[in-house]
Structure formats: structure tokens, C-alpha cells
Amino acid sequence: MGAALGCVWFLMYFHLLFAEPPPKVRLVNGPHHCEGRVEVEQEGRWGTVCDDGWDMKDVAVVCRELGCGAAKHTPIAMLYPPVVDEALPVLIQVALCNGTEKTLAECDQVEPFDCGHDEDAGAVCEAVLPSTS
Image 1 (cartoon, rainbow, N blue to C red):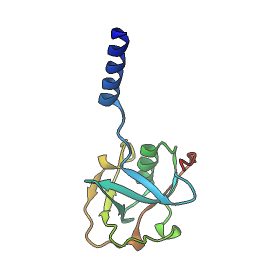
Image 2 (spheres, rainbow, N blue to C red):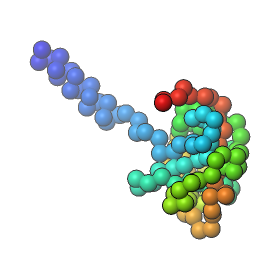
Image 3 (cartoon, rainbow, N blue to C red):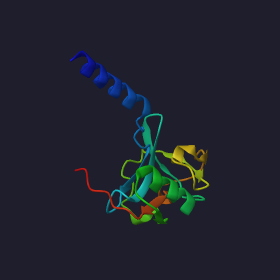
Image 4 (cartoon, rainbow, N blue to C red):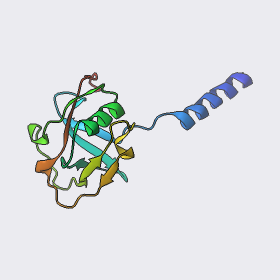
């Protein structure tokens, strides 16, 4: 029994050390989890990404981070229902991804200075994940 318990503790510790953290990006208000307006989490709060300079390299990184397959295209966020909570901040003005990063947080970023929610970035990925609800 003692060896089994020790093995369980080792596996739990190993999982805590090497488990992937949850994504700090999500796609909202699209028809499924792999399409929608891009939102990111920074310092415990969620906000949007401006579409200034937003391109397929940026979408590829978002799709990769979410496990949603390849990037399909970069729609404007106005295709998705608008942000209702105007307190939701724009957190990134420009994401400067080269397309090989594992997460959007690894890309160089410009902090927001003149972007409103009518310029929120969108993403469409090829995979459709099953709904969690």
C-alpha cells in the first residue's frame, strides 16, 4: 500500500510540474469553439485584441494554442455579436507573431492606444471542438 501511495504522489507531482497550463486565449461568439472574436487573458482579466496588423500568422498561433488545427482565415470581429460589456478592455493593439510561436503570449505585442471594439480581431480555425456545455 505504501509503494502504491508513493507512486500516486509522484504522478500527481509530475503532472503539476509538466502539465500544460490552460490557454490564455479564447474565441467567443462564433458558431463553435474554433471560430470567433479573439480574447486574451492578461494578469487575471480578459480582453480583446485589436485587428491592426492582424494576419494569418497571428491566427495560426491562436489556432495552435487552442488545439483547433490550421488557420483558415481572419474575419473581422464585426461578424460576431458585439461586446456587450464595454468594461472589457482592448489588451493588445498589434500582435506581431511570426507564425511559429506556441502561444499568442509569446508574440511581440503593442499595448493598445487607439482601438475600439469595432476593430476586435477574429479567427477561424479548421477544427471544430466538441461543445463542453
